[in-house]
Length: 133
Image 1 (cartoon, rainbow, N blue to C red):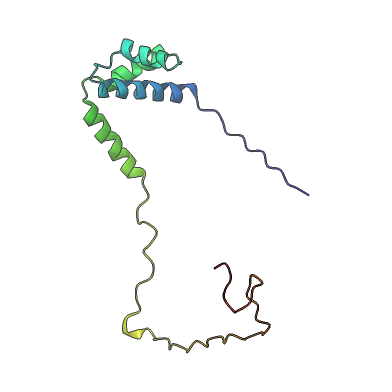
Image 2: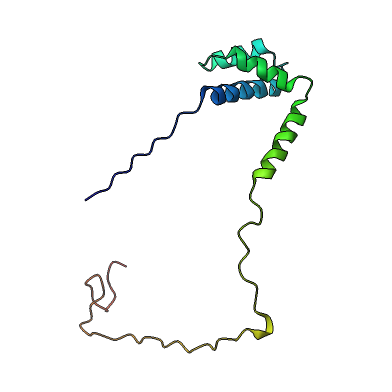
């Protein structure tokens, strides 16, 4: 008997997806040395097969007005750093120092090869050599 789970991932909201498109188009334009105007952003999104939401373009333009791209990226990096978990996951236990007991090494018994006789090797030949190898 099998148990089926049905997970439904909600689609991204139009608002969020549109904002990401606008931000990505803006950054591409800035990397290319362009101004990053609303018209340029719209043309980049259209070239990628999407449509630009005018309300999002206006809101984005107001958000970045008078800011340098490097300042925007630095601000975002600071916000991401706040979300990052701190502490790592521990680095394993430290050595117990002098209180740690040293485990004695036990001699390892080696297995002896047993000659089964018959003069056969694993490929069915004999020990006389003279084979293909």
